[in-house]
Amino acid sequence: MFLLGSANRDERVFQNPDFFDISRELTPENRIMTFGDGIHACLGAPLARLAGRVLVETLLEGPEIRVVGLPERWAKQMVRGFANLPVKFVD
Ligand code: HEM
Image (cartoon, rainbow, N blue to C red):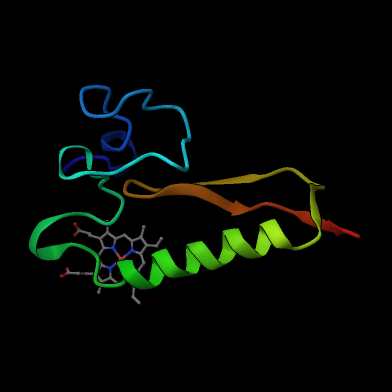
């Protein structure tokens, strides 16, 4: 079993693996492992990608956002991220 987050930062596969490059081109040679691979790859990946796209577009078009509290980490064996990130919309 591998760590998905670690696989996505494999310096043998990705140039500048720790740099968040939203325009990074993904090819069969440097595919990301976020949604797994092979026969048990994520069935919801297209929906999750669409939701992510809508979220980013909405945030870019919407009001400014300020972080107003301490972020709370969520770290499990497979997935890591934020359980809580208090924000405020500023007009
Ligand atoms: C950002 C959101 C998501 C991430 C990062 C994610 C990630 C993953 C990963 C890594 C696996 C493979 C686990 C393994 O190797 O056993 C997986 C499997 C799966 N995911 Fe997702 N997933 C996401 C959203 C969704 C959504 C929205 C759905 C359904 C609407 C979904 C349904 C499934 C199902 C049914 C499987 C099992 C596929 C199988 O075992 O054949 N996922 N997901």
